[in-house]
Image 1 (tube, rainbow, N blue to C red):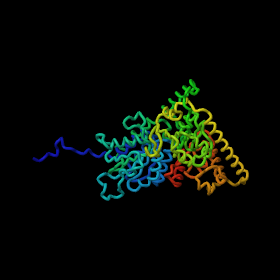
Image 2: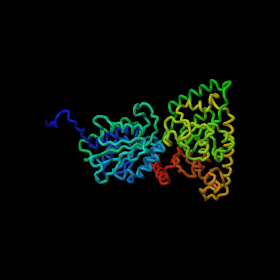
Image 3: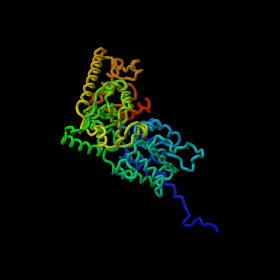
Image 4: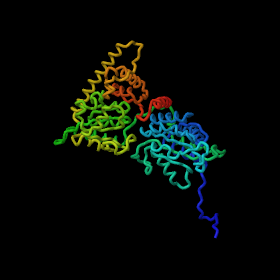
Length: 516
């Protein structure tokens, strides 16, 4: 008996959505998830996305930047995302264009920066056929993205794997839980790759061209005025609701019972280390518990009330000074990237280490560091004080403050003497570290570094006074800043992790200047 192909129970493949519908569906979700900037590199296959981006920009729903070179485009997006702390889109055509994004994507992965990489791809029927400008784009950036989706037929008639993968991308970009969008995810924020297959026609039909402005206008209605504009005045990072609640409770309890409880253990000698991206909680936590704060320039916590100037000098080489050897516990916030003394301290096995991780870190894999991960401020307080009271006594902090001020005064005296001996027409020049400094890994206020530290201090003060953003590379000059920069009011400072080189730094600084 011959089967009738027209029978109702015959399984039929749903038609592939129109390319413009796919582009609009992807862009709509990203914009509603917070994306306000997109960087487009022109290409034929990515035309549907370009048309949708143009309509959204015309309606004021986002800002589009055009960069012909994909590598430049990627670092443009990276700079904007680092400055805004919001997802930023990248759009490119099919083929090797995608490969130009890789250096910036690697940096975004390690630094926890939300890049939404939208790559246009040929339809599935052309994969593996040798068709022009076609390569393997699925999972192209693995393992340097937090999520990826291969949208071969999107939106799906019935939500399936493609929809789930795309939702995972949105979660990675926003830090939300894909199962419950009202709560934050425990996973790191980072880049996501959204590969979208487009078949011809790649341009909007007359009917679609009429609908695009209406769709874009609906997006603009859900965006606060000025949200998709630049330059912008960035708000400083804020404490989370959990952190605010803990701080309020702690201060109330400290006022009610300021004295050390009878029979309580002595407070362990704890320091708080604020690495890159630590943000304000590190400073507030150290202040509330009266603990020394060792804050890198890019931590955004250097202005803390208990921040220690010249902390690397006070720690000494290999953290082997008298105060350095006295440390019993460390609390790490953010990613430590600069000081060998801090690295030596964190490697010590006779010291107990905790890492404050309200979400999993983007810069190391769990289990690969000898550290206790703590996601609760209350638990972090218990680790720091061991039930010895509401705050550490003044003796421990005073010793650090005194040593830090002495070291800072000595450095400033050397810098002032250097400036007095220089001609007014000669600017401080960065010189290489002395051979002794290079061999033993120390980076302190030795005579060879004084010209560089004078320049670093002048640059820091100028940027702080003019409310400028400072971009610093992973080299000696940022270590000079770490030593000499004042413990001033918050200033935005951006740097790279050690995965990126100087060409990337130049690209990032140029793109930040466009945005800010």
